[in-house]
Image (cartoon, rainbow, N blue to C red; front, side, top):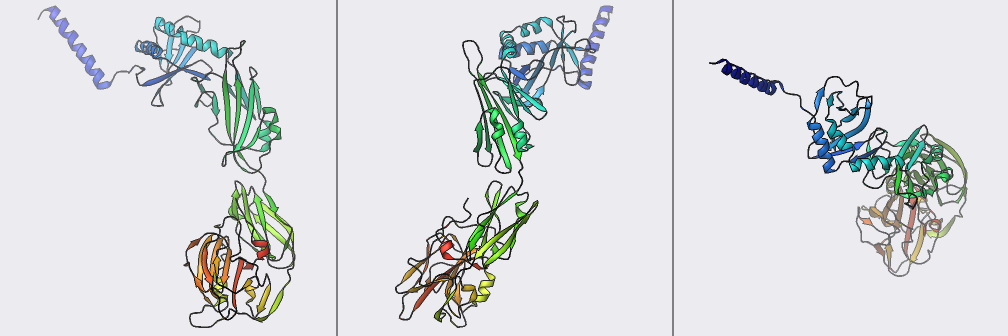
Length: 518
């Protein structure tokens, strides 16, 4: 083989070795912009980014395709631009453009891993002098801004027309001049009122709106300098939106809107409210606790009667019913986590009268159940569900023959709050309100009886029925016919009674009223 042939053979072998080495040990992959990427560019402050057009992206791609690895890039510290390339919303590439510190037009790309690549100067200058980037930088310098200061932290929003993208301090991206804090912030009302706004150019409109997140109800609406008038009514999560609007005029080319949205968690001191300090025997009143730390710990303790469980009325508001059983003046204690309060309640006595004649609904027999045992078993003092809606009503029409605490001789003492009708013709009996039928049976004191539980320990009893049209477990609605009472030759009596956790209620104070509506 000639000398020239040997050289050719050696070159071929060396080439093959280089190729095989690259395949076996890998070659350094030059970062590149791919077609499925969205590319954004920002200046040094990294507050405003612009999406590169397809032509600009081709320029950047061409720039990167001519990169040459540079071992030492310490002389390139003059920052020019930052690029971020996304693929399907995920950051795929983040090169930064630097040039020589002496201002000479010699550029490198620096990557997050600390590597440097030398670039072709002509291509870089072509990108930097593109019309869109030139317009972007001119626009940014004069664009109005809104700065929101809360405590020691200030956030600046740039008011740019739709289509621009922004970055905030923690580098999360938001669009169209709307800044939304990602994390919930716990602030007191003083923090709300201490929030300040400033503007590089005064906008034509600035509005502040604060709403309760659970209901979207606007709690406050006004100007920024009116925030000191805002007082959150209850503990809970609120949303604050600050909107600044710039309108284009003959002297200003810019228009747009900045919106700052802040998610706030407000904690207020708990407060106990009593609907009445004076109530008649057999009446009810409500105890309301606002902003409780632990609603499940709320409890009412009193000797005047019985209280239901607490039920949520609204965001940060819980209430219970209290039935007044005994006349006199009693302390009422409200307790719970972080809550302790005492109120004095006066219960006025209701007149009591025993009529002539024995209790007419006493009966005997093997199938007859004990009234006292049934009464003890159906008190639901721990019930936390509420089924009724709207006002309670009388189960039959017409004025009762015997009213509250007008009792028969030998009438069960638990039944002293029942009212009675003497029936002269067939009558239908309706449910006083919505609830669940929890008992149907013949009682030794009360005859054929239906009991409907309305929730929270509140029930209505229907005595002396001739027939029943419902079954235990049925859900009834207000006014639904549940049975009837038939006329007979002898006196026929029908009675009804409203009971809260074993305390009989005065129908005159109960019917026609709605309780704990939300």
